[in-house]
Length: 171
Length: 199
Image (cartoon, rainbow over all chains, first blue to last red; front, side, top):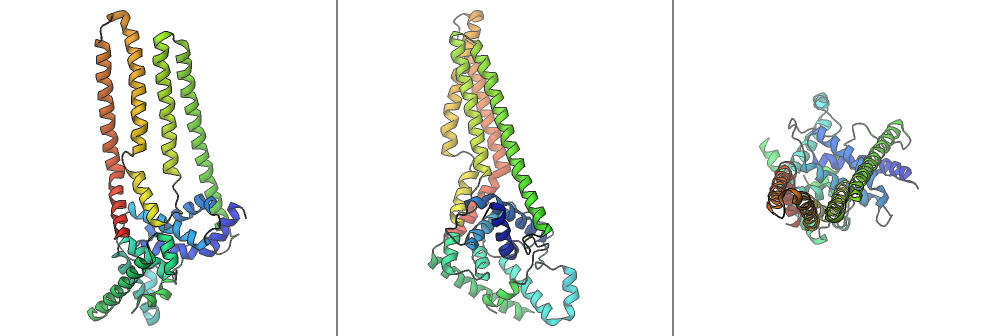
């Protein structure tokens, strides 16, 4: 498989996953799109290093996360609004009649607010957890030990549970 | 509400203009064309660098070839210095441009921290012999040139050395200020992210 074919294959199978990870890292649409575009460029540039020793998805997660962390370094603050990915404020207003859709939007906004308050390391782990990546693979991707990954995920689970309950009692 | 309950919600997110749903879609073709254009631009930059490098070496080598005696020694050291400067600049460019994004995150961050430092041991290792070459070569050229006007006086050499030292100090200071404005804050951010990963 040549570089172009491998790139097409990688994007076909992983574009949504890559974009979701960008969404977990950035609250603002323009920053997410920048990170997504940047990731595609990095994937293309680094494709020759993929030797098939690890799964393609593991390799893609590494490139995506490292690109997102690089983008955090130079992240530009724009309007400060948190918008769920793939939607706009206009869509949110339109969906107010549909209670389920509205609840999903609210959950998404809460999740993104929660993610933005986490450290970069914890945000990285939650991003992988939400993508159903195993603890062993998370350790392989990040270089954090498996036991440390488990401890951190446990703490984050406790934190999100508490914050959600606080939010529910507050409203 | 548990973290797992957010999994399905999170997965409803879609890229604004998906590039990869169909591997042979026009959007994908355009993307690949753009990426190939970036590759071509990169190759052009490298070619241009090699041309400039070649020109510098040719100009200084011919100047060096025209000299005799001590002047020839002085110019040979300066030519060698210029060749090393260009080689060093190319190495730095290559190191910044070809970052390995496939490393485990912790290793990637350690690598980034190393890259964003103002001066690494390798930079010192190359800078010191480089300055020695320019100062020694320049001193020989200055001394040989001015002997006919000042005899054996070391005054021109002292003036040259003072100017060189001032230029090196000013250059280092300007480079440091530039790095502090441009990359210093990034280094701080990388360090804080690394700390979070090590916590």
